[in-house]
Length: 389
Image (cartoon, rainbow, N blue to C red):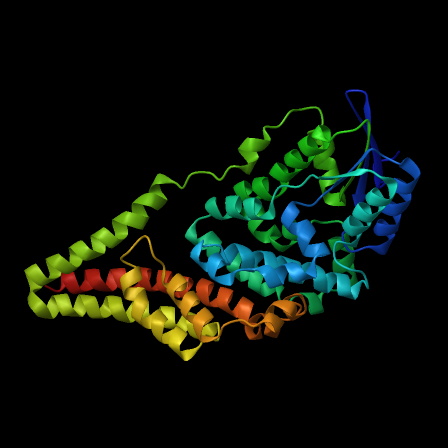
């Protein structure tokens, strides 16, 4: 086999592994996967999917079972929104190639079941990958990530045929975040290197004497690189602890703000103290409200953002977006049709804003973003008031 062939032969403890590097949006790859499994008749077929991604490509009804309130309360709105944007990007690329997104993985599962082979999920949970990425980023990089994800909603229609050919050979997650990954080596390690190591180890751990592994072509070099080494999967599945600096800011900043308010009233009287509180309320409330407005939130949602942000910004345990998200859920409770149409709605930018499910997620994310910006805007203004005492 040459280096550019999609099929690679590996050995492990006397077992034979046939590694197929696929294009995620290519009918030819799906056909190759089916032929190879039918010919090889393996004991196990490994696929580059986790349980949640497998369900997303196989079960359209799974969205109908989602508890959106639980998502908001468990602080998973951004992760779910990111996952949906990634799914949207791949789905629209697949539409241009006239193939179902993830078809080669669906084909691998179907061919494995027909051959009586065990299906082995080899990829790390997408939520863990996104969470590890999020934890490793600073505020500015998080803003760039959000911008990159939202920008991708409108990029597909502008892609040239050359761009689409490149996408065939790349992981969608990697392609979307390439710019950030280039400037942030830690992020590249999580998105690419860690997953290569994870995939290699999961394939090596798969049962059976003859295994066929189906992965994106972009992961093949990394899997072969890490094939002879052992990887601790538990370490790659664990969420890194939040940095001490993040914890200090989370608790220290509200304490500092409250301390400044007290000092302002003490040293400058009611005028100075009132001015400081006014700046705080205006910056937090108005920018959080602007975030809810950008997300097309209900008027009550926008009002709740304005009223809650100045208070939640001083409480590390509550975020303004959680309040506005719950208000949006109550004010515009998603109906069954919103969940049923979710996969179709995420194909367009407008769909993200008109579907009641994704709108709730946007409300949470943009309200929190507005409140965070408001905090950093208000702080220097409060200090300026103190300097004038």
